[in-house]
Length: 432
Image (cartoon, rainbow, N blue to C red; front, side, top):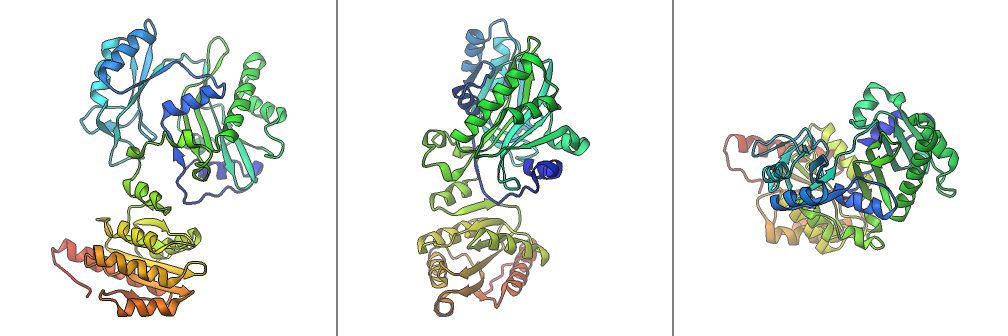
């Protein structure tokens, strides 16, 4: 979402920004705050809570005489306006006494929070009790990788503490994007430009400059793809504090960011995506009913587009890559087959490095173990395509071969429509 906003509001500064279907590592707020502290970025006093008793004790020992805020630690935006499935309203609350912290924790821990971004609910297993900061004003700052300018982009707005999407919609000029030359790094000129846009002066402006430098240092050293701070608070005494943050990390950097990646919370992620990652498969669940297995991100995107053009809806983005093994293909097919929403499966393979016969063998082996009357539509082109077709034709399972992608998409949409109508009429059907 942020990249779409920046695309509209920073073209004059950075050109066009694009994004791919890639899952970045996203960590909880309390982890983001901890990493920031390690990079000399000032944040309010905080405590991680796992039980109501811990909430009460933490308030007594750390926040006595101070107001605090208790926040649900779930990987979703819009926590404050969310609703727990037990009926408790809001994932962010003010706390002024120990027993209040305890009671809020009782209502939130172990419950699923429904938000705009997590409509099915997401389990809250931890809370973050944080010192309340009295703000003179709220601002927005973020760093992100920008393909348009070929490097990092510093983004800021004087209108912080609210949804950046809303700011962009109402007043796009309030958002400034400053491209950073990655061979030079963040310069004083870059910082001065952003400080002026934020309307900061004197010592407060200098503190904001120091904050940007520390943010950039963390952005590079931790292989971040996005470091978003909303809000940054200017306090009455002129300090500049990070009050909330969202940080994403490059999944390709796991080999050198082991400590950060060890703090990944799999319970907050789609279990299908977690399982796919174990086999080096790039899987993202969607809300359609046609399961897709494709090699190559570009071909996967094209496949999803043509499914929609034919009136269907993809159930996932699944890229098996250019060098997938038979076991990876088998796991990919299992993931599609186990999805209750999938009414049809479309396999679209262009074999270059990836051999079509390996794909066929993997599908057949998966079918032997997990066959549930699903009849996949298969389009194969490229290396060893004739051997692959022979394997499919000689197997004991019904699979529909398509001549090209247009034909394959039309057939997959047709199969999905028939399966959906039969389900609604409570009719058993078989394509065998």
